[in-house]
Structure formats: C-alpha cells, structure tokens
Length: 305
Image 1 (cartoon, helix red, strand yellow):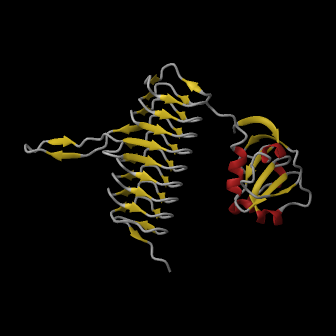
Image 2: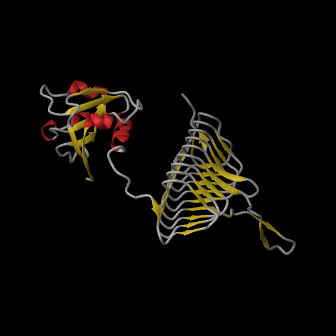
Image 3: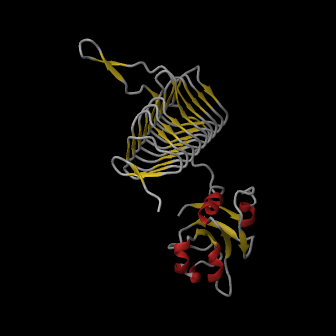
C-alpha cells in the first residue's frame, strides 16, 4: 500500500473545513503513516470500514490505526480502544476527504519538453502538460492537469482545476455528413468549439467533439470516465457523471446530477433530465424526465411501486 509522509490525525482533519461532520473517539494525535484496507491493515494506517464490514473488523491487528466508519461502529468497539475512530453518516466520503489530503500530487507542475504548444495558447498558473501532448490555440485555466499524449484542438477553453487523463482528444470534428447529388458523403462543417468549466475530470482515451455551429459544453464539476464518446454540441450539466464506454450522441443535454452508467447509448437530440439515472448498457431513444431511472434496450422507466 502506498506510503505517505507521517502526519498526526488532528492535522489532517483540520483541513476538512466543515466538509463532513464526525465524532472522534480516541487519540487525535495518533500518527498516520499509510493507507490500508481492512483485510490488509497495518499499524498506523487509516482504514475505511463500510457498514457491511463492521462484523469483520479484527481488533487484534489494527492497533494504533485510524478507523473511519459508520456511526453504528460505535456499538462494536472493544472495551479497550487502542485505535482512533471517526464515526460519520458517510464514512466513504470522510475517508476520501482525509486521504486526498495525505498525498502529494503524483505529477509536478510544468510543461514536458516533448509537448507541442501553439504560441497563441493561453496557459494559466500551475498547469501541468504531459509528455507528447499537443495543445492548439486554446485557453487552459489555473491548476489544470493535462496528462501525456492528449490532443487539445483549437478553440477549446478549459477552466481551472480540470484533470484530463492520458490519450484523450478534445475538440476534434464531429461525425456529421450529407450526401451530394452524386451520392457522395460531404462532411458537415464543425466550426464550433469546446468549453470545459472548472473542476471537471475527464478520463483516459476519451473523445469530446467540438460543436458544429455552436459549442460542446461540460459544465462545472461534471465527471467523465475513461473510453467515453461525447459528440458535437452536447451539453453535460453540472455534477453529472458519464461513465466508461458510454456514448452521448450529438446535441444531447445531460441534466444536472444525472448518472449515465457504463455502456449506455443516448440517441442524438435528446434531453436526459436532472437527477436521472441511465442503467448499464441502456439504449436511450426518448427524452428522460427529471428524477427517473431508465434501463434496457430500448430504455424504459422503472415503475415506482
């Protein structure tokens, strides 16, 4: 398991800035030296305990560790507590907030010598651009990370604190054709751009096409997984998740806080409502209202009992 620079628990939780409420039992000065799983727990590590794993905690092997668990864990603590326990309603979230503060970034800021940058590109502060990446005439906000072998085409505007994983292509032309009088395919012009707002994450080997006459837009805080295709003029609203192998066809609107599961396909021109869920491998051919879950091929709503 990955090692960290040793740090006291109270120094870590002081950085959370009210993001999560918790009850602390035990020593706030315990030293955290690593992160480990419940099954391979080692001394002075921080460990996440889900509600399903409460009964399987081996109290004999986790001395001097920090457990992050549900509030129900309090009823299972041994009489002599040789650990520190953080109890909360959402232990997975609290664990993530803590652990994300334990590690230094795996990559440093700066532009790799092999990256190709258009001289008219506008690059913000503390930006990382990895080996072999190509950056066109575009803008990149502060604290954004673009990993190796990405291709960012002209007229792409990327906000702050954006993470783009390796081998992703953003701003390439969309796939739209019309037949001419001879029956030959003519590419419809794609002269728009891509706008990626702040705090967006984009996975590896993902393609996001530029708009035809407008823009493709990924709004604040949305997350796109590996191996996703987002076509021209799509709008992914704030907080939405689009997960691996999903395909979002042209001019689709993916609503706020919606969830597009792995392998799902959404037909062009549709609207996926806010807080909606598209199930694994679903093929969506109709608009989805807010707050509904659709599954299957063709996708249909799950009826509420």
